[in-house]
Image (tube, rainbow, N blue to C red; front, side):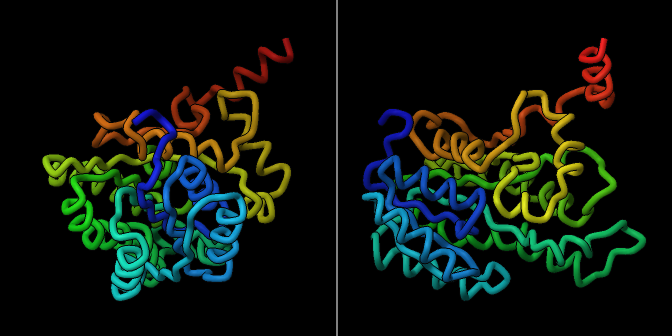
Length: 271
């Protein structure tokens, strides 16, 4: 099967009611997959699923609260009842609500409630998704698990330590799952976005904040959700059939340059 051809495969995308998840769900559906649009915002999930169907694709919406294991069990059961199998799992959901992220402060200011909630959604949730999906992938002869990690987990930062640490744990989970399930023909990889300027991100960021981050991107344009959908589509397809246990960035190079990159580029442009 060539890259981009996912005819009759079944994919679950968590957190796919908007932003990166929405772009990935639509890309997978566009490649022929039956897509389960799973989100805690059921209305948003239904809207995305309806848009996929209106475009000639196959999709269903399902409520999902990653903090509740029963919700995950219900999602998997609904997927099997509708489509009979699961071939692709994209663990994309994370709790990135602005009001919640604003509480993810420095370690001396961290509350156990914020720390525990962050890990419950960003790390425990994907683990439980894999736990309940894996048996169906094994029964079906294999599959591809793709986790949305974060560039913030690669380097130390002054922002959001709970979020970045939970994503670092997710990167390690990715490698463990790849090792444990590989002989069942199940691949597990992680894609690490930088700042993706989705509609939601643009609504909460100022122009100065966007410009500050953009100066550290190696490529000459701003990011968009579809920039993550491309790598996800590759990893879901047979083009990536021998790729597993990889944790790689799709961030325009923002975490892979010298710390003075933006200043040097500015000086060279003004020379």
